[in-house]
Image (cartoon, rainbow, N blue to C red; front, top):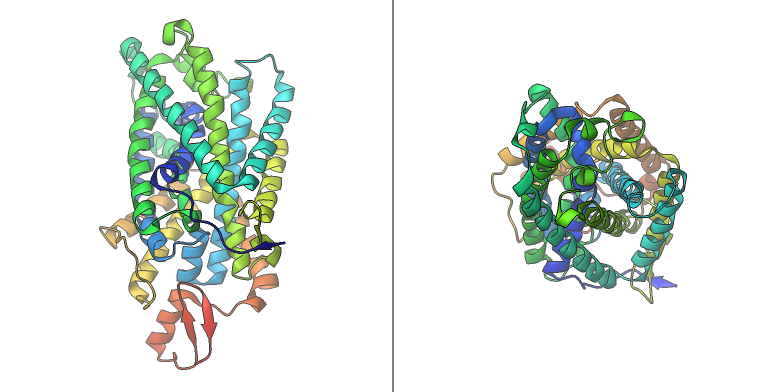
Length: 465
């Protein structure tokens, strides 16, 4: 048995740590070498460009989160703005992107684990599966416990990264930065599309808004604070990676001549008194587990929210009475996580996660524009996104520009999510909901046909007048 309410147990610091923990894993410990292969040393600029494109969605989400401080995040905002069809497409897309990213983290940490223990390449998948089960159990056990553990882990990892940058700044080789943009501006844009998913965590905390104390203040502060800090961390650490590691190792040091999966340790042997490889490998394993944990925590709230809106089966909205967590939603998300670890290659996980996330971020900016234009009476955010609507239009165009550079298969996969979400809505959700969203309210108002229909945009409740 269970109920449907979650406890507000997360303060500002653990909320920021959930966001940063979701960003601090693969974005630093795996993706720099993949980006380097596309752009050379200019991969540093790719991280800056990705942050600039992410910022509008972060500001948009921060505003909408203070108006709708409930679990569901991206799904909830797009559903309430554009209606349940677009909502379920966005919810499933965001859910998959976060699960893909968490799977990517757990598989990617295997390369760092090989540097610490005598585990064969064939056993890495089993280790990742075991860690995946551990993360699932932790998320079932309680959000407050998860948040506390996340805060401790991320704080320790940040200390280690600061040490890495300070040590590295003394011995970096300047000639490793020339030529800087080896593939020109197009290479920087392509690399930005690949590392875009590094910043996905900045908006993940919106999906656990229902569990955040004083959400009107803490959510915007956590989002803006975490993206600012992590942009500085990314630029500093990636610059150190480029200055420390040999370019050929970064580009071809991975399995079968692919990009290195351990860029942080490729040039770390001279750091920390010669113990750099071991220390960074330990930090990498911990950080990647942390990212997977944060990803599962936030992604499991999407099926919870869609179930509450009758778009998915009601079993997914039940809250465990003992731990006050969405047990069934966590278990479903965890099952998909384990399947991805077992069967999907790590590089494809990274591409798919970025493609889905870019598409969803574009939709988030569109949702805010709809809310502002429709101006429903119940939309009362405590935080107002600056620069509207120019910031949001830039975010949409920037996202679509990066999506065009990600490759055919990821784009087709994103299209598959759209088709799948549409089918689920038509087969299951359409007959169970009568919501139209803010865009429907706007259209009815302009047609003068608002007489017999009412909807509380923020809750999705409908009724006849």
